[in-house]
Image (cartoon, rainbow, N blue to C red; front, side, top):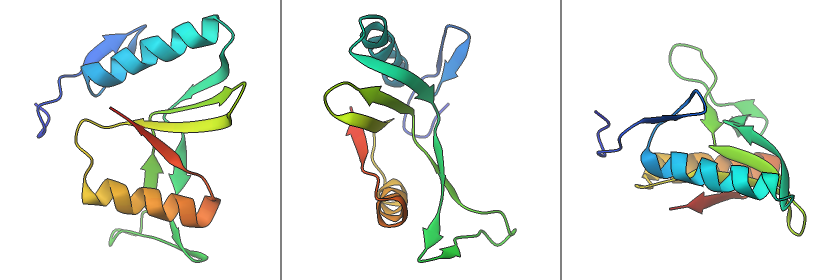
Length: 110
């Protein structure tokens, strides 16, 4: 059981951390079929840096931010989305690091 009460769901053979994330996946698939968006990608990841220095855990493994979805929107261009039922301070910090290093805004969907 997830600590925030999220219940995993499997759609198209893909396991999603929550029903809400699965619902968003279905919405995006419909938009892709309708030609509104394209190149839907799941779990795009971004290595985290502080300036040019990789952020690493004590184990030596580099810290990474994984969003839920990445796609091309005909009107808005490339979109990175993260479905959040509960937005934590850690998630906010990681998104800030992604914005600082990559210049990418991660859009939160609830």
